[in-house]
Length: 293
Image (cartoon, rainbow, N blue to C red; front, top):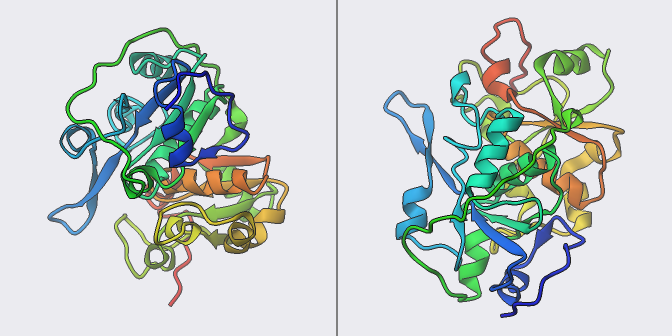
């Protein structure tokens, strides 16, 4: 472990060893962004915050918890994980101790998609000094690195946010892609059975016409939860890798952020996220969806 201030990593991901080597540095902030998907009695699903698991199940030493559901979103929309406005994001970031100076290292206890969502939010609100712990808590535990338990009280500070609107698209823009009036490729982060419509947790099932299927689990090494290498990622992401612009989406903008991270890893510079994703799209009976066998 080292107290030496780290340089900003060149990659948007860092290894568990890198994080361990920089524990104790005053120039980093470790952030757990975990959330969980739970089944509901009606056969659908709901998201719950990972704050209890953070305290009981353990977290990286010194890490603070970021509540994607209740703080780093806009609950007034009624749609899970809707992006907050600039001031709400700035307030949430400041509340966990982010101060426009530190390198923010985000992780989760799942497949990295919740961490990727917070990574995307920081970038979309003007802050690039943010990286994702590759493999998340699973990779940390695989190295038998230490954990801490219980609540961690953040050291609140002031954070300045400046939204980058080009990193988001709305439903009208996606309609333009489908109609051929907007030029971009669509990448869908849904699990395969949701992509085909065989499983439908929303009002309607399937995917937006013309989409490339890129479920998060296909972008990761199954044994470690770490991202595949550049060549393998390019293969999984298919034709989207050569498009001038890529729009990612999923059910609620979470898995889509992992797709955006993968595209960034292979060097794509023009990626945007459709925040409404299929929660918004499928709710419109006139919006086309494709189902396949």
